[in-house]
Amino acid sequence: MKEKSIASGAACFLVKDASLTDFYKSSFFQWLKKEEFTSWGRHGADGSIDWVFVNINSKIFAPGLHGIGIAPVVGEHAVTISEFMTIYGIFERYKGLDTLRMNAEEQQNWNQRQAEAHRQILAFWDGLTYEMFREKVKDGLVNDYGRQPDNEVEAFMKKNEAWIRSSFDHKSPIGELLYALFMAW
Image 1: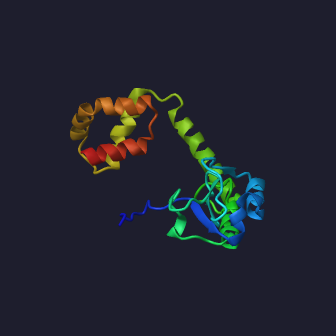
Image 2: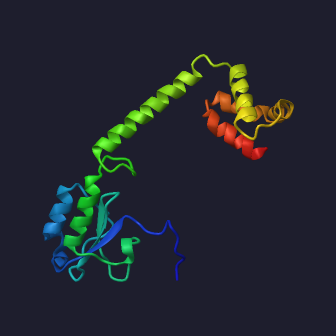
Image 3: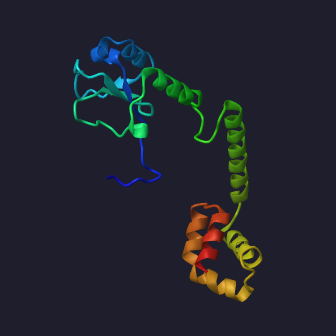
């Protein structure tokens, strides 16, 4: 038995219908072409097989083969053409949206917040010298993370000077550096 984990699964559906025995003449094949799905291209279709693998992420399909599981299947079971169309329609509704955005307005608001955060980051770094950055790190460690005495913070920072310098050179978010330094304390 295979081990189950949160990462188990796929984006491939196994679609089964009697009309698929003549797959390349089926209306489902025509629909797949219209939706710009492409063939896996590894084999032809066997007239005795009435199922097809359809991956909604890669938009690739492959007619089934006797005894061969071409790909892991969502839910580990076949669905009908009608059920597949319903599922596909749900995901098409979210096309072009980030994973956790549910509609265009939410996506637009998210994009605006991200752009503003990016502007703030650029403003933070504009004209900032290493000495100024180092002082902000020290201030963060003294006042925000554990309230350590100045002399202990300075000794700790000297021990981690290369790390702090690298963060400055790569324009790493100061909050991430402070958290990492605090965790390493």
